[in-house]
Length: 341
Image (cartoon, rainbow, N blue to C red):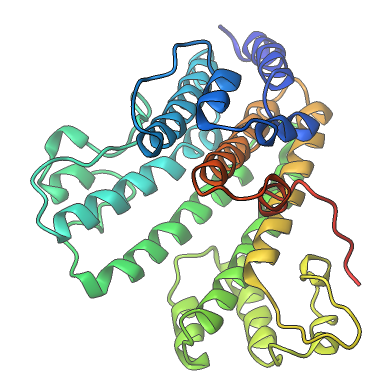
């Protein structure tokens, strides 16, 4: 199928899938059920497996994930030569797989862990298990050629995350259609905010010294044009008092901060920033999906929207398993409107 025909077909097919997906207002339906069995029936047409609820929750999440990857790869296969960015998006799961492989080998496991199915677009040679050097050879991850020590895993995972963002950035800039500028802008802001979230997590959760945070960023595999602005922004964030809202109001992404109420103790919350950014990111993807209908953009946005749907499904599943109130679960999933003060 030539590109123009493939673009038109994929746009129509993806539109139909999204219309029946649990995104937007329909996402609230995921929190209207009372059991994981009911959630299964809402999501799938198949019979509910006869397994304990904890196992059913994991099975449901895996089934939803497999269904999405199957849909995406099917749409991608309609292009005789898909845009590089559309293939590189799947590296999100290749990176996740490599993290699992590294951890499994680190702990001496003999069996290949459960992985995301990315074939035939995989870059890692999974059949070469447990030889990690052979698995990553001739791939973008060839540097990951030995079993990591436990102390090396966090740094390796961070490098993989940075590498994924860099690959997406470079392939987005290589798009040859009218959607290029919007896609590049979408990813540019996303990478900047991701970097800010990493900074906050390292500072707050790991209480990492400022010098080490800056060193990690300076040695990170990020595009140079983004790294320079990220370093400047990170230095700005590290100079802010975590509990001084007036200082944080000067941040360029202050709109993502957790609400402030006069007279109430406030501390910046990385989880809130992450959830609100994720919500904005997906909303932008929804708008771009229809703005550039006959380009690579709809399938790219389809990937981002459906990946967010999976996160919402996991939140719904976990909330049922842990007996979390549905209103609280919807807030965690970013489905409730909260105005910042």
